[in-house]
Amino acid sequence: MPQYVLVNRRAGKFTPEAKHASRAAVATTLMRLEGSVRVVHDKDPADDLARRVVLLDADAAQVAKIRSTMPADAILEPAVRRSLHHHTPVEVKTSLPLSAALTARTARTARATASSYRVTIKGGGKPLSGIDVMFYLQDRAGQTHTTDTTTNSLGQARINVPAGHQVLFVEPIPYAGFWIMIAEAPPSGSTIDCAPIAKAGSSGTGWWHTVTGVSTSGGKRGAGIKVGVIDTGCGPHPNLAHVNLVGVFVDGQTLSGSQAGDVAQHGSHTSGIIGARSTKSGEFAGMASACDLFHARVFKGEGENDGPTQADLINAIDSLSRDNGCDLINMSLGGGPRSDAEEDAIRDAAQRGTVCICSAGNEAGPIDFPGAYPECISVSAIGMVGKAPLGTFSAGNRPKDPSQMGKNNLFLAVFSCFGDTLGCCAPGVGIVSTVPAKPGFPRPYMAMDGTSMASPAACGVLAAILSQDTHYKSLPRDISRANAARDLLNQHCKSIGLAVKFEGRGLPHV
Image (cartoon, rainbow, N blue to C red; front, side, top):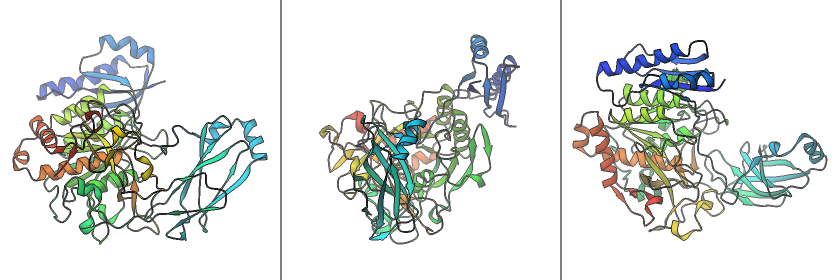
């Protein structure tokens, strides 16, 4: 049976009576569905003013049958799943896993006639062992396929190239300290030397701080502002030890914050962009390191089906906004259709004073949901010429279209989504931030690209702006506070010379 999400509307419900009536609509709808559903998880809070969120498997015909008689305050809709924004090198538009491209018969033939291919990966002249390496292969029909492996103790990565395929690109992905590289068709036996990531400037400064006017020399950036992050989890990392882990929201259920460690690297990176507290020279600082930072994990992992449904995002938004009083929430995720239930939660959060800031997406097309909701501030990604070494993945994200080149060497990243409803732009190419510590990497930093990096950069800049505004901080936690935050962001944005659909209001500047 298909999966559905059932919730009660809360946006616009300002009295206890209205909230009770809305909550009752869920129970009424469940009774009408009785016998035709399997409840996966029912979040039914003891606080009867809170939202009830039910994830269930239901008979599609039965759902269609009761829709016309459902209470107006109940939302019953198909489950949609959001994901991380991934992107491939600009030279490779689409690619499939190699295993998916070969039938069993073709695979047997290909293995029999495959040729061995080897590259050695070094960093700073020394072999890099245990790192991921992605290979992009092209078949006779011109289709591109991918396969990956890890380097051995000598830094060597080996694959078998099936008959009729050739290597287009090799992408070494060091865990920390070195840039991700892109080598075009290197001959077998070649060595790829990964460029080292330069240390941060004075007080943890990167180019993304400079262009947004963030001074890292002061210790009060973001003080008094509560910022939430919804992502893959956070930490462990010594510079993120202050982050409040509010919980894990997966499959419609809520788990303890003790389980909210990062299941990828993405959530630690986005959290670090906002609020990393660097303690050693050369470490990059967060945009608003003095803010009160909260993290809700909604991903089970990095797999194709490990992303959150709208039920998980709703529960995470409610926790950060209603339970923890966050002023801003960053969501570096998206994709898939709109959701009335998800938009209601975002609108409800705004009515409590919380503004959601979202990545626009990495498909170079229309803005993804949830960023496409009018209640959200969507953020496109920009880069700066010369800030990523030649041969790196980041350097390849500079556009060839002159209309996407702005002032002061700034440009729209070639992967960035855009549109007329875009909120603003922010740095999202070659951004260095925290990733989880692991053996051999006690304080790791990695460079990443994406609107996933631009969104927390904008969020951190806005937190720094809000922390300086005494009027904003005096406002009640209602829609006036959310509107004031949006107004302050708009007032502090400066055009970088791009069309509105590419930069929105422009680049936020403290």
